[in-house]
Image (cartoon, rainbow, N blue to C red; front, top):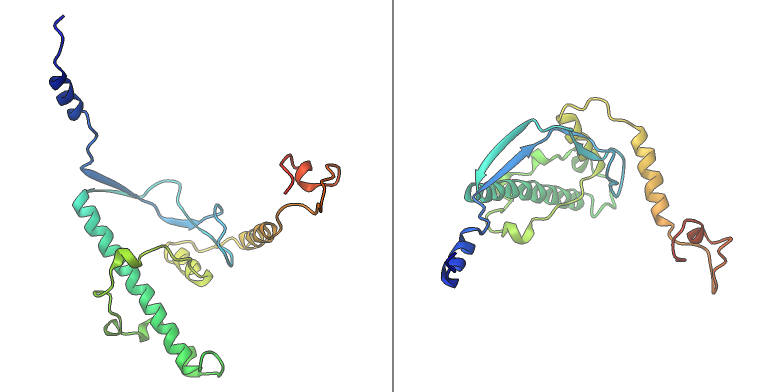
Length: 188
């Protein structure tokens, strides 16, 4: 067999590079999670075991879709911040009662009060923890009518157990009394 030239080998290698030209997104309905531990409250968010729709995008279309989604999330976040600021102003930073502040909702914050266009979305966008009420509202909006209340106690127990870490050993470790040693890990 004839030896192949080095130049031909380099061309062949270049043709084998992986190229991405499409993004496939699978959409899942929201369900109560049971798999994550939110920093507060009960009812974690999860997803259905099977997707309910699929959509394919070009890389450019996907980037545009993400930009639109991130802008919408940012708009909601800025509205929530503006609402909180209005409530703080009416209650003098929470020191006085205000019926007007209690009655305010996101609908009371005008889109004109929010300047999303002058905010660089990529610099600002990051996942925010959702308050318990918001998670419950998302679950209900997704068709979850019965939220399992037991998860709330389970999550509280997990958060409490995470506060206590290690053992009670001081100066030296007694493997007979050391919780770490008994659990088969190095003394903490």
